Image (tube, rainbow, N blue to C red):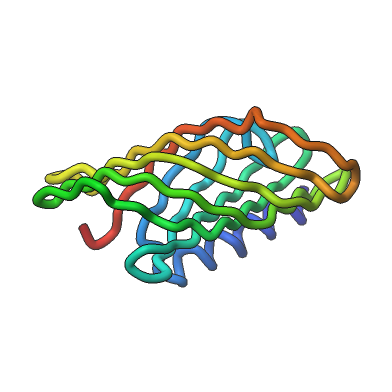
Length: 148
């Protein structure tokens, strides 16, 4: 339990010190349960790193996806876009798991309020501890947008 708390503190401190552009929560199927701390780090105009830290079922899960953004509609301060991405996931706990996850989603950033609301789907392929594939990774993201 102490290891989980220490790992959580380190990852949360990393998220804050690295100037996350968005920070919030994700509800849905993730590596370590049904909820996660959700962060987005800009990697340019059309790409970003989308990271999750989740807890549950005796597992701490870490997902790190590289997303490519598509912005078909932009108005004053409001943005609606969709994104696709992929990256690794890691589960640390009683069992160790490692694999790859894909992502496709839509997101809306509100004008007048520093909030982003998104829906995504994450199929994943686990390679280590067991080998399996699942398509049940639907999620709802609610994040605070810094500097907006």
